[in-house]
Amino acid sequence: LPNHTAVVSHIAIDIGGSLAKLVYFSREAHSTEPGGRLNFHTFETDHIDDCLEFMRKLKRRYQRANGGNSPPASDLCVMATGGGAYKFYDKIREVLGVDVLREDEMECLIIGLDFFINEIPQEVFTYSEEQPMEFVEPADNVYPYLLVNIGSGVSFLKVSGPREYERVGGTSLGGGTLWGLLSLLTGARTFDEMLDLASEGDNSNVDMLVGDIYGTDYGKIGLKSTTIASSFGKVFRKKRQAEHEAEDSGGLGHKDHLHHRQQSSSQTHNGVHTPPLLDEDVEQHEPQLPDFTAKDPNRPFSPADISRSLLYAISNNIGQIAYLQSQIHGLSHIYFGGSFIRGHPQTMNTLSYAIKFWSKGAKQAYFLRHEGYLGAVGAFLKRQP
Ligand code: ADP
Image (cartoon, rainbow, N blue to C red; front, side, top):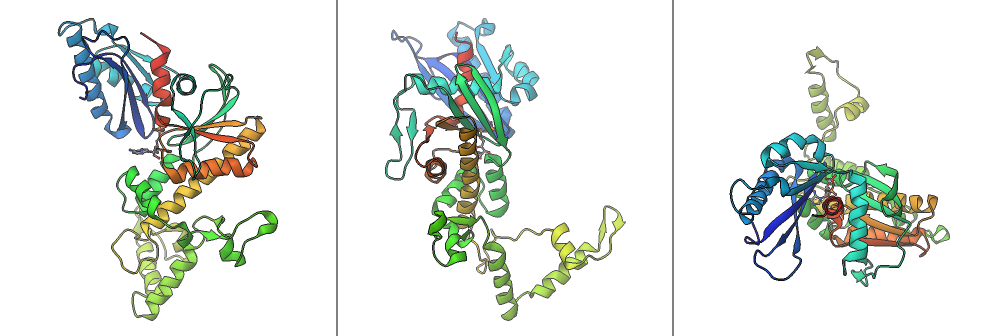
C-alpha cells in the first residue's frame, strides 16, 4: 500500500459493471496539520477480490492506528454505491467484517460532481485542440446542468439543484461497447491499449466520409469532406475488394470460402441436423469474425484505424444525444463524467466538438480530472466522519 503510515478512517467504493472505484481518506499518523488526502484506486469489477483484499489491508491499518487487533472496527466507515454495492453486499461485509452503508448511485454521482465543481480547484476544464485543458472557476450558480455519465452504459441526468436530479435518458452504446467490440476486433488486451491504438489510427481507412461520396465537401448543408458519413461504411467494399484480389492471385477464393462455410453450417447444430443454407443465410446466421488481429500481411484494416473509428462512432453518438437532451431540457452546461473518457484527447475533442457544433457555440462541454470517481466521491461525502 502506498503511504504506509497514514491513518485511514473512511472508505467509499463505487462498484460498476466494468470497474470498481475506490476512494479513501488518509492522514499522517502524527501530523499536527489538520486534514489529509483523498486516495483514488480502480480495479476491474471482475477482480473484485483484489479490491476487497486492498480494503481489508486498509482496515488493518485503521485498526493498528486505533491500537490493536480487535479495535472498534465499527468506527471505520465503509460506504458503497453502484450495482456492485448490492451484488457484492454480503461478500464485502464478510471479508471486511464491518457494516457497509449503501447509497443511491445517481445521487452519489451528482454529490460527487457538485463537490468537484465547487470545492476542488483545477478540476473542471474545457477541451479544445488549441487549449486541451483550460480550467474553469466555479460559477456562482452552476444549476441547472446536464451530467452525461459515460461508464459501461451512458446515463443522462438533469440536475436542477443540490441533490435534485432526474435521469432523463440513457444509451447502451457506451464505454462497455468500445471495450467489448475492440477486444473482438483488435488484439488489444486492455482498455488503455485500445486508446493508444486509437491515438495512432486513421479512421478514413474504414469510415465512409462525405468526401468519399461527393468527391468534395457538401458545403450547402455544412458538411466538410472529412465529415464521417458512415462509421465503418468503407469496410464491406474494401473487404470484398481484398477478397477478389486474393482470389485473382490464387489465394483462398471467395467461392471456396463460402463453400467451406456452407459445409460447416450443414453440420449438426444442437443435435438437430440443419440443411445447407443459402449464401445470404450463411452470412446472417454464421457471422464469422474476420481475423483483423492476426499478423496477416494482407489484412485490409489496421487495429489502430478500427479503434479510432469506433471511438469516434461511440463518442459522436453520445455527443449528439447529449446535445439533444440539453436542448429538450434547456441546459447549456454539460458535464461529462465516467471512466470511458479517461482524459483521452480524441474522446474529449469529439464530445466537445459535437456540443459546440450542434449548439453553434452556445453550449459548453466540461470535463473533470477525476471523471471516473464522481460516484465514489459522492458516496464518500454522504457520511462525513
Ligand atoms: P461502470 O461504473 O459501469 O463500471 P465506469 O465509469 O467505471 O463505469 O466506466 C467503465 C468504462 O470505462 C469501461 O467500459 C471502459 O470503456 C472504460 N475504462 C477506462 N479504464 C478502463 C480499464 N482500466 N479497464 C476497463 N475499462 C476501462
